[in-house]
Image (cartoon, rainbow, N blue to C red; front, side, top):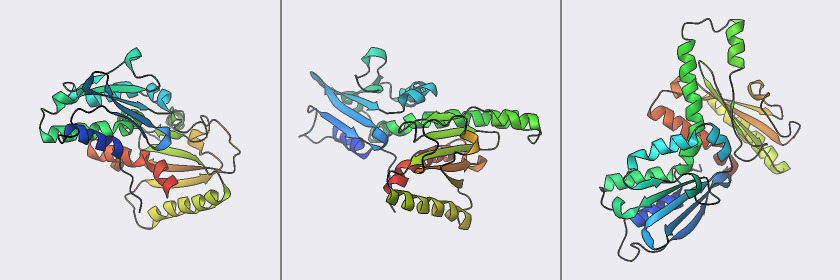
Length: 287
């Protein structure tokens, strides 16, 4: 089975070389562009005349959607614990052509313990994961609010059902209008829907077979996994009001993950849930 790492491995390797250097690569000039899935691009470079300072920038195609869901504040919070070594750039200081930039002072980082440096490297190499996670965290926070609000309510009443049906859907257009992630919170679940397009007939056939097997596998054995549904061409009812792009594309499909309270427990379980679900599209298209 193909295993996709949450970290960007090339970014992680680059940072390891700088923070655990041998004598031959200490404070050398550096300028690397690293491509990742879904048109994500990283740029790692030393600043002119200051080789101990690493400028690390990221570009995501869906950044403007993530801004709406608080990505900047979320990332700033994530990296605030490394404030001694990391400077978060803002406004016109962000590298041109990228969405988010940080400067790592490797001279300060080298003074830290091995455990600290490994954590720093790990968190920076998760920059794309954390960016995408901001929308999921917002949806999960809304789930927390709704579950508390409706804890003692009759959720079968027409009024409450109408309120829940009209709950806003978070939309991440990670590959344009035809390939999006839709996230809809409710009081007892969070529904995550991926739209995907098969570009040719062979992909279409194999994709549909794989997705159906994916759905059936959960029914057969993995009962603790999220419920998985697949629909072809027609968007699920929950997201019909927000789906843009072509609706009549025969090559389009929708994969729905229904996350229940057991998947949404705050802490490591919630973090793992986000990490695995957001990687589904990349994993699926590599299979």
